[in-house]
Image 1 (cartoon, one colour):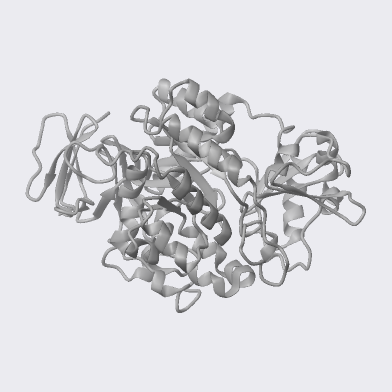
Image 2 (image 1 turned 135 degrees about the horizontal axis):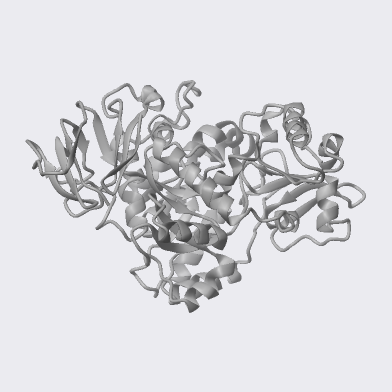
Length: 522
């Protein structure tokens, strides 16, 4: 931990009773003084002159897949790929730089923008990769595109049954097409060699550096035990300068309860969140669970877990002191989760703070229900930017209550912002832009995507600061810049409260501070 004196600034504290200050003092990692006038000058404490710039509490991404993102920095990334030919060219290029038979792993393919009448299949990949197994996850992370070599190594054939709550896409002869939906991805994913732990830790540190440059001081991570193990190792060795709240995967719930892990337990660097559960798929893969079919089809999506099983896991976790964070995209999925929370937890522990992750589409009635339920709405504003056209295409008029941020706030919901990275960019400034404008940086759509759901800058900042702190039982230690709180903050080059809202996405991070230590400076 370090000490730092910040002067000559415009500091947004996030404290409703004293929202603005000019100077701030951090001693031994915690805020010791904040206010107007001169902060105390102490021997050995470095002074950082903000030059009138805006400072905010440290920004936290409350829904990220960080190890997936970190390892993806060295994988075949298909962000921005606009055609099948372009995607195949990337795979072919990686093969030219790989050893014989080496796995080719990638992510973020998005066939929805490729202008094709069909989805890609294994035979497309076979053209450029007949001898290398290939596994490319979709942009939404709910579908994998694999080739024949990968299917063969995994033993997936025409007679392989669909895992529960998932699907192996098949042709008219029953043969796998190379698309694996939801947990069926694991049929092939499980045979891909695990990364070397030392490399994984190295890639995490690289990714943390990128996160710091975006103004992020912490995350809520939705991954498995390997990720938690790597973060724990970095923390024990004093190499973690990033605050991690780590959710418990469903397959580790019994172990977590046996170990006595409860939501909120941990240290200053790594803490336990809730148990991460799933009830449906995603919009991009058309596996979101719907009351009515996706437009132009008979497809109602995929229910990935039976309601009784979901309720049983939520109750088991709650009895063990662990809250739940349940993935729900479609309107029916969100309705089911709200129903389950209302019935399963009506006599439960009021201390636990349960969440719905994504909350992408609600019915009008369920918007009000969620707001009055004390259930946290963990949403990702950058999904608005990426999904505008998909919402119109697959949800039609139902899209009025897609990403209904303002409506949720008006009904009393606690909003918590994240990115779902690597599905979308983890840049929180872009997230604030999305929530405030509901437009892409290009200005599309001109009127904004359901502009009545726009937030103010203060509301968006709160969802990246106090919201994540509250959701992780840390509102007394972080999320605002007050005395006694952790010295985590970000300094921006421009004032997002006063510039034209359409310019927010252009704002750069000047300085990021974690525990009183400057971890990034442009």
